[in-house]
Image (cartoon, rainbow, N blue to C red):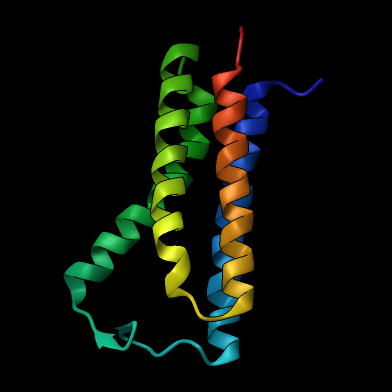
Length: 122
C-alpha cells in the first residue's frame, strides 16, 4: 500500500503537470499573447506575484514529504482549498474547452488532496 504522504505529494506533482500542460497548449493554440493577461499588459510585479503563487504547489511537494503529520495534514488541506477556490473563480474566464477541462481536472486533484489529507491517520 502506498503511503498517504506519497499519494498527496504525487497529487501535487500531477497538479503542476496539468498547469504546465495548460500553459503549453495555450501557447500552441494561439490563445496566449506575450506580456498580457486577459488582453491587458501587466508589469513585472504581477509576473513576480504569479510566479510566487505558482511556486506554492512545488513547495507543497517538498513539504508533504518532509513535514510532520499534523502540520502536513493542516497545510495540505488549507493550500489545496485555496487553489480549489482560486480555480473555481477563474474557471469562467477561460474561453477554451481544453483550458476548462484541465481546470476541472486540477479541481479533482485538489479535492483528492483534501480528501486524502482529511482522512489521513498515522
